[in-house]
Image (cartoon, rainbow, N blue to C red; front, side, top):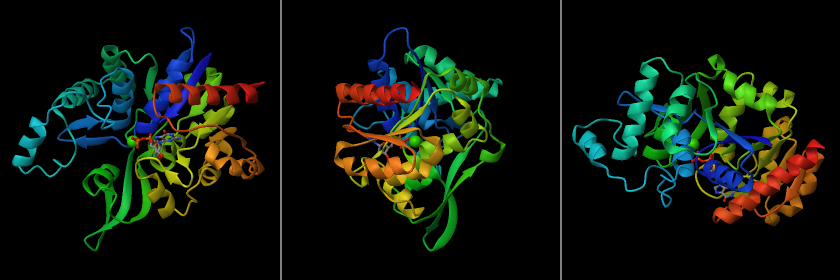
Length: 318
Ligand code: GDP
Ligand code: CA
């Protein structure tokens, strides 16, 4: 079986771990990761979602934080702050820094982000093929108001510097119109038996992936059904800022609201058992829905969720 998973960082990496634990040694998993969280910091290309997935699957993640490396130290960050560097708010650990140095070196040598990621993965052996959604530079920016001034700031500045504590007037995917899916992504979608959308942020993780020009067509042309997992349970996101962003964009904060937002992208949608009363409304929108436990508490619940998603996809395939 060939499985492709569309994924952001936190929900994405846990779900992909579940998929890896759910399948057999002959099954192939390809992860198409969001890269619109990427940012240039101090001349280095930082790819938070690629790294969260790579570190999680490679057992290098700080599991408590959910991002960055285990046994991390923060000397470089402190030194940067002492220099008064304006971007020192970003959580750049010393171990993590090496990843960004290697990635940037490879990009400077002319490799694509896809190739640079493959090289980083040679160390981490994630057990999946990890692909950026595009080799082009796409960055999510947030239209907001800071200290009474209307501004458009990088998503990381909104999320990490301002802790999502500033109003959201809109979201811009800068560079998206010039981006395209890579040959690697297109080949994976074309040959997939199952395509899964992880329970990732609909606006800033899954949204950018499916907004890459050509991606929606590639998904609908694929022979595999697309089955997504709701990141919203009982009217709230489990972690992160998804509910704030949905609210700002006028999208109902519910499993149904997110399913409608993704629209014709989805053939199937998993909602939590707590949201079982929404199955009919989702099916009325033409999406096959099932209610199963969606909390990824540990490896076993993540594996079971992956099995449920694969089962729905298999059902839709036949
Ligand atoms: P980020 O890139 O690190 O923000 O992570 P993602 O976009 O991949 O995932 C963030 C989303 O994961 C949030 O919207 C959460 O609601 C969702 N999420 C986190 N944990 C769980 C879980 O256990 N189950 C489900 N269904 N969603 C989850
Ligand atoms: Ca992210």
